[in-house]
Length: 149
Image (cartoon, rainbow, N blue to C red; front, side, top):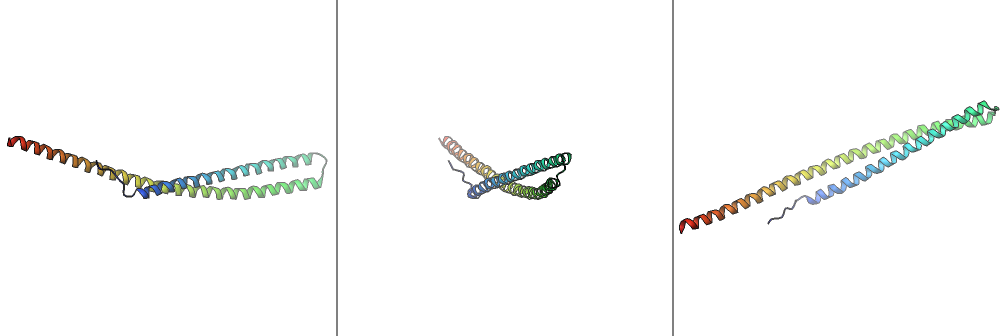
């Protein structure tokens, strides 16, 4: 019996590898985004802590130097938070870019899989046609022998 071989199997294999690579890039971009979001949460928590300390400094005996340091720390945290938001936006853009690339690679792979399936169906039809032709020939030969006898 004939064996089916897909002529473009090596391309399909490359598409699988590209898809796996795109998946890993996507997961790395996602992990980076999560890390950046965690950093933002930590900065926000620190800012809130400084704000609470500032309120306590104002309630107690007024220490101008400590209050100024606290205000500077809050301002520094606000700046750090803004910078972290920029980092998060970059990470989100990278995730989106990786998602698009993954989507494109998956579509290409699926296209090649459909081509392979189509070729396999054609192969099965050809085999079926050849088998029917062979059966018809053997039946015709057998029938022809019986009628001559």
